[in-house]
Length: 618
Image (cartoon, rainbow, N blue to C red; front, side):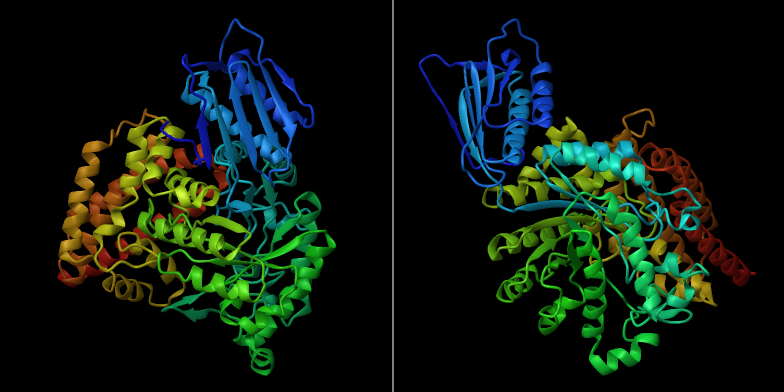
């Protein structure tokens, strides 16, 4: 470890003619003059008990000093540790720093004083537990451990569909793939013990497809039938805001969730109501304006949120384009400005929101979804710009998002660079550079090799000259196979979509060279660590998708390569077999079938393409 994670603001070593060290294991007594909390005591004991010493004459003392929320002063002398802070959070972060120092110096810490405080008040992580990928409680605990060490203080588990237990509507949870109320309470306690606020999250406007597919709620859809968007006929996903029954359904969802949360916040989401202004809401939107219909519906449900003593939060993708309408939002609502590319205008939006005196949080992304591994440079740009906007224009903080579009096929390790970078920037913006990411990731994983491989595998999108900021070209056939499922002429639409996203000859060569390079570095032995196995299987999918590109290009040129087709099927079957084991290692088993369906649909499209091509040749 070369530096602390995140980097502290001020560190001073106390030099003397003879260097003196604190033996951390000697600190058996905790003097809590002004502070005491069993969580602090537990962490202090963990630090001390991790090392062995014959001496038992040291003290860890907590003292009150007005330094600011979450700030601390950590003074280390030969026989004494003094932690000064004005709140328990500051004391906790001092102990987290002490834990890192104990590890760095193997229990013998040089005398020093550290003064530190965060740049941003809210430092959050938003974890998608929907789209079938519901983590086990153990996985969430491990995530909380990581976030606590990185001094995050906010965690959201994103809910759409049926990934939470709705006790008043048990029929929606029939597949058993959800976080139960009891599990939620356990997770909340564990998060709170680590000074992390577990903020409830529930979508209730857009992203309602799974609810609207049910007979009980299909009449609440804003449009009847499919909705044509971005070149595809898609299932309806938006509630009709003009229907009182839509409000009643979402209120019931809130009533099932909010009583079980101790947080003072609630993320109502409200993003991407694509069909708003069409169908049943068209008349109201034409009469009042789409943004007014939107804010009225939000404000009505925000009053439910506030009745539970929680402050509403809302994604900004709709309202950010209507500054006048922002003023009509519930005055307590916090706007979450999200963007996942390095060109997203975080700074411009933050400046506007500051002028409007609207509290806001910036929300970049890990950029792992729809990419197998990640789009590393997109993550770097979005996180850096989001942190700068919040820092410069007085945002409440930053929340890093991690989504699971199209099967949630990426593995958790590929989200780690974004998690680390957000921690570094949100705590100490001015002292952080991208070069710290690998160093910090190496310390967290205790492996420079794994850190380097995660970052290297997350850069494959750079091989694509005409880069798409949503889905990489290599991943695109999976996306297309999903989107054409509602088409009457499935194969023709699949072919058309794939044609416009085929790799060029040069891009194919770049990928081929890149994958050969990775193959030399990766140990493809399945007996290695879980993270290593996840990297190996991600590599296998990338390799199969490159073969898919070769097969597609051949078919488009009326040259069906059956050998490549068979190779793709072999690789994808091997991938799915391993994917099942890795899925169950971190997530609940019932959700696997929905994730694997994305691969099965791709295989089905390729089989149809093969049949058409071979019939044509005959």
